[in-house]
Length: 339
Ligand SMILES: Nc1nc2c(ncn2[C@@H]2O[C@H](COP(=O)(O)OP(=O)(O)OP(=O)(O)O)[C@@H](O)[C@H]2O)c(=O)[nH]1
Image 1 (cartoon, rainbow, N blue to C red):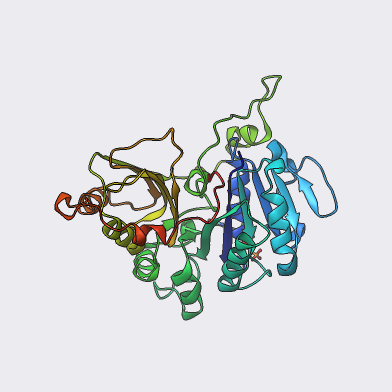
Image 2 (tube, rainbow, N blue to C red; image 1 turned 135 degrees about the vertical axis):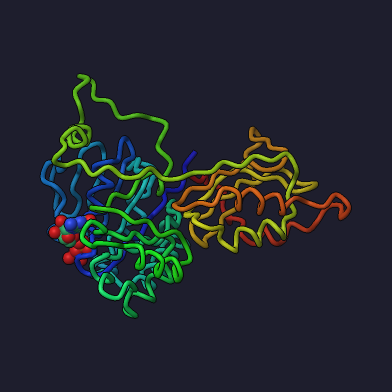
């Protein structure tokens, strides 16, 4: 059965640290096969050590990762190719520099998913902001506002270069709809973007792989704070309208969530969210749940808030079988086995 591959967009001002984030993801991939899309190889400056082979527009990296170049015109076709089951990639990352504005890039991605890139899924818009740029006034400039308000995740990078990033962090959190993650050297945990695959990378000789070697070398080590996660299980079925409103409100600190839920009188549904993007589909018959089994991933999660918000979504037995329409609005049109 095929599955969907999340495509994550990485945007941000010149020099904010987009390439540093991408390189960190590649180094810390730990078995996650990543496809990287850039404008040109030079711009990303992928560490020579990671490059295992060269081709004209596609470069093979260590551990089955790929790096490709394109402009905005070629993006949909390239995403269709990269997310095709034969590439066996787990995640595709598009570095925005020069490709398009973040809003335009999101539109390009959604069009590609609705069109030829049918194995791709929206993986979120990550906006990288340099702490240095906002350090003077403790707030982001108006030029950042648009992309920060659009971001599913804001990575506040280069916090080592300012004395106190707290005011800037607070300012970003007041305008960003999703979590804001302060980091040094683009240290974004890949687990925040995609679940680690079941398979594990292991060389036949038992030698360390390139990225294991890099992690061993303190000169290259920039450990990330692990993605936060909260798992919630409940036996009571949910009210569809309340649950849809809960997802639409975007719980504090949540970047993505996934799991299975049941509504009164209906078979279970698989639910996945990334930022404001919600996807719902009937669960495979082998999956059963009495009420809720959900995992939330993000930064600055509020566990108590999540739990009580989900408690408040419980169906009221007195109202019988409520309409599923508020949830079915988000049903996928096809039956691809999602990530
Ligand atoms: N001190 C410090 N330097 C950083 C950090 N992150 C990135 N840098 C440096 O900042 C510079 C810019 O980082 P890049 O990752 O190239 O930024 P970019 O957004 O990809 O830049 P463009 O591709 O030019 O748009 C590089 O010299 C990085 O080594 C950080 O957290 N702290």
